[in-house]
Amino acid sequence: MAIQADAYELQAFMSSEFPQATITVEQVDQQGAWVRQPVDETHLRPGGTVSGPTMMATADTAAYVVVLSHIGIVPLAVTSNLNINFLRKPESGKALLAKGTLLHLGRRSVLTEVNIYSEGHLEKPVAHAVVTYAIPSSHKSG
Amino acid sequence: MAIQADAYELQAFMSSEFPQATITVEQVDQQGAWVRQPVDETHLRPGGTVSGPTMMATADTAAYVVVLSHIGIVPLAVTSNLNINFLRKPESGKALLAKGTLLHLGRRSVLTEVNIYSEGHLEKPVAHAVVTYAIPSSHKSG
Amino acid sequence: MAIQADAYELQAFMSSEFPQATITVEQVDQQGAWVRQPVDETHLRPGGTVSGPTMMATADTAAYVVVLSHIGIVPLAVTSNLNINFLRKPESGKALLAKGTLLHLGRRSVLTEVNIYSEGHLEKPVAHAVVTYAIPSSHKSG
Amino acid sequence: MAIQADAYELQAFMSSEFPQATITVEQVDQQGAWVRQPVDETHLRPGGTVSGPTMMATADTAAYVVVLSHIGIVPLAVTSNLNINFLRKPESGKALLAKGTLLHLGRRSVLTEVNIYSEGHLEKPVAHAVVTYAIPSSHKSG
Image (cartoon, rainbow over the protein chains, first blue to last red):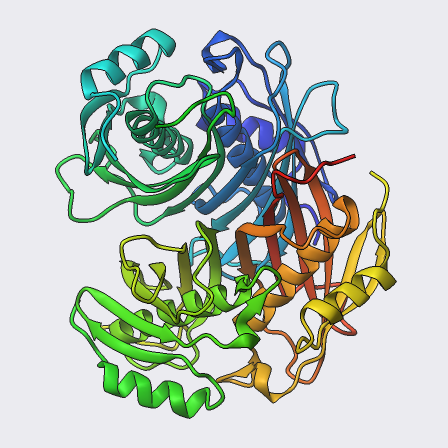
């Protein structure tokens, strides 16, 4: 499963399509994709921790990046299912780092797994997600 | 399962705790809670449709509101699992309306279901979520 | 969304294809499908309650029956995702009743919801599932 | 996270508590637990492939074994959520092998991941599950 788009191309695509997003593509290779979401006060919730929706958005982006890295930049790939478990509180002053990996690349859909961490604490994920992307039927895969 | 907090109280709480949020609490009763998320260009994604993370955040908020309406305003209730299926494209120019309903109120956790719609099209949900909230063990229910 | 196969046809199909199954199709109409799983000692687990896999199989069958009731008897429809939450212990001496309902009928997949009950206690579900079936691409709907 | 019960103890427990089960515990160590489900005609479905419920039961057992290997043999641990994605058809003449791994060990619950394979084809999983077990509150963890 060769990589069809690298971190530089994926970052350029994300910046162009989601200009208001602050998430960055950090690394993309055969083992998966890392993205980084800086955290400021708009991402916090009562109790001072990072909000659930911030983590969901990070998981979805990590999954999107790993999907596009495998099928090429197909903007109309869309999330069809996302299942996320929240494991522990992220540290409020830390960015989130998320690693997306490919579980299965099918004709119609792609299954990915995402682990989310507080930066500096990569031994204990704060959340774990399984994300399915639907591939537009007009897309011809490899 | 009497309602412990009404729409007015829940809106006041949400505005206080999440001042930057634009989502509003529309209705809360025994049948569930309705929330409304206005959609502007920051919520869109390639293809002009509402982004997945916007729908996830809306689902999570609808679930939070229905949970708090049943257990009272317990700010430290946190999402433990969210599973969302995306069913069809929301209409890009329409607000999202989401209805959260209670499936099960346990001692440790609350299970809710959320249907999300494009405003004006309440016959066909655009997404369906099942959301579990963990109740802090310090909380005394009923 | 007219019904394409009734309870009698679906029961005949299930008996023919799964001759060893003891689950029965009880009712099928526009509101959904009811199935009934008798419980004997082979379905129990430590603690004397009905096992998780028995409930998962019941959920999957209820979903399958509601899917086939809407798309017609298409034996190659297969489960693509099943997400189940276990809410309370079923009563060990009671059959399970499950009601499957249609959430979304798409071209490629069908989303269903299943509530499972202990017979005689239909006010409190013991489990709740969301089940997606993939429709074979050779199938022509409607 | 030391192992609290080994493959021999877990097999003895499973044989004692689930005497009719044909699944076996193959290996248990820090990396996870392997279980093996022989497949006969009772596990097949239309099309000749292994049924979804057989795979769900295998996933649940693999998760149970990995949970018990970490918390000790606590028979009242129960599944609270199971989310499974079916990726490709298992080979009908092959046993299923499933590997369960620990994702998170909390006070109240344990999150595990399970990959299921057709025996002899360990490079391509046929299904992927995320399973949460609830730990009885009477249990004292390490």
